[in-house]
Amino acid sequence: CSLLRNSATMQFTDDERFDGLYLNVAQTTRGIEPLLDTVFSFLRRKTDFFEGPPGSAPNEGSAAAVAKVNEVLDKHVRIYEEGRRREAEQKREKAK
Image (cartoon, rainbow, N blue to C red; front, side):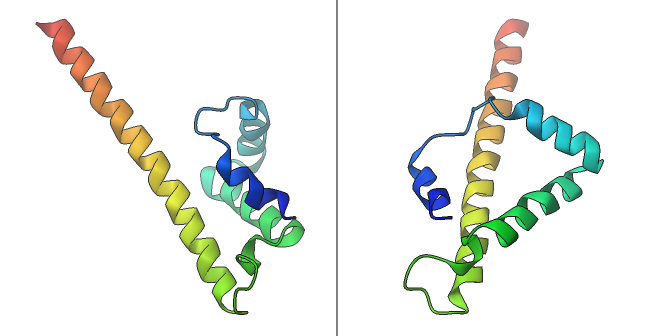
C-alpha cells in the first residue's frame, strides 16, 4: 500500500488517537516484542514496506525497511531522552 510512504510527511510523534488500539493489542499480545511482531507482520503481509522505494533492486527493499525502522526508532529515542532531560532540569529548578 503506497499510502504508507505518503504518511512520512505527517507528524505522528505525539498522536494519541491510536493509544487505545495499541494498548489493546499490547494487552492481548502480552508484551512489547509480540506487539512489534504484529506491526511488522502487518507490514509484511498487507503492504509493500519491505519492497523498498520504487526502483529499488530486489534485495535493497529489506535494507531500506530496516533503515526506516531505525530512523523512526532513533527519532523516538531522542524525543524520550529530551523529555527525560527536561524533567530532570525541572526537578533541579524546583529543588532550588
